[in-house]
Image (cartoon, rainbow, N blue to C red):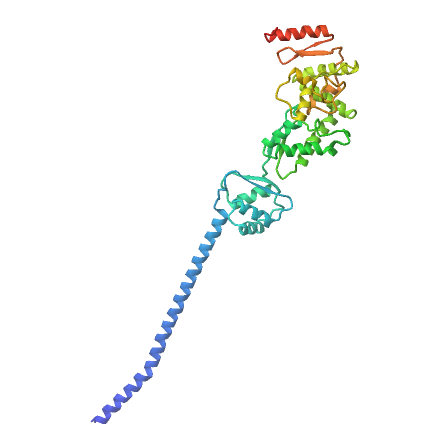
Length: 367
């Protein structure tokens, strides 16, 4: 039989067992909770890291690869000696790239031998790598300047201004002061007139005006060497500049040169209208056409008043005119006048010349 004591004893033993089991149960439960919390936190952190990494990657990709449209007609001068940092700063300032830092990092990751100095024009949307490649290969923007035969330094100055390279006044200043460029050819020259060779040139605004003028003079030197012009250079160039202005027909130029050489030999005034025009260009008084009163202008360039060649060229002759002045035809002609068809009639005497003048006036319907 079991008494009350036995029942209480059993209850006591049961309580002891429960008290022994509960800590283990609670310990396992909290461990599971802690493990769950740790795993959840780790997943959250990893997720946040991936989101941030993707966002940063997207931001970097946008800064680098997304094309950017620069302001209209954006031109940038990158001068020789500019560092990568300076180039990047100039590009960002001009609105060509979004990030100076991204450009510099791209240069580190994709190094090129050098980034080319020059003038760059940005007219279309482009990504940073595209901009970088343009500068690395030297995709420089050039201003094209065409100088026709016979242009004066005043004409060339206007052409340079129209090409956006400089003001006309600035180029004239160079043409009138940089005579050391031709000191071996024409020691007495007062300007570069006659030696700025007619041609089509490509210039960039990172070049100085002195360098541009030197390029034209260099072209003259090359042509002079090719045609054998190595003596009496000033006289030949002056004569060629007159011939260039008198006729646009290449086949007539040796004839025109012969007329002026014959007049010089007989100590006759050259009576070259273009020389009077040039005299007035120098004083700023030329009105676009020549009148009889202009023939009296007091200038050593006025070959109606002063015998012999003018003191300097009256324009910049091309190769054909230089060759004509160097190798004139052998004739006895002393006069010429237009025939009304872009050519001329030549005469040996004043009487013959007057008949040619009358024929010319008749072709124009004049008496």
